[in-house]
Image (cartoon, one colour):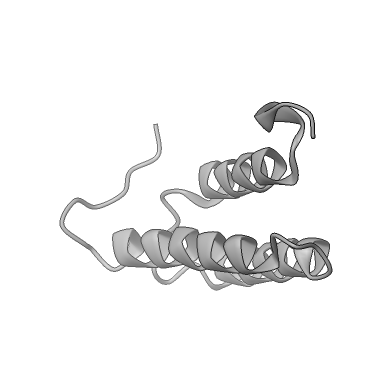
Length: 82
């Protein structure tokens, strides 16, 4: 096995980070953005569906989407794009 940066785990982290970055700060009533987020999350799931890291990828994407949703609904600290 190579280094961690060459592993599927690293790719999963990077993909989730990019997805979080792309959708961070969307508004609760922005239906097109939510549809794009759900499509991106679905594509992410399909990408890792046949890997041994499938469960890790599923758990991580759910956490990211949940975080985006909580911020959009006015969680403890509202999300704001910078």
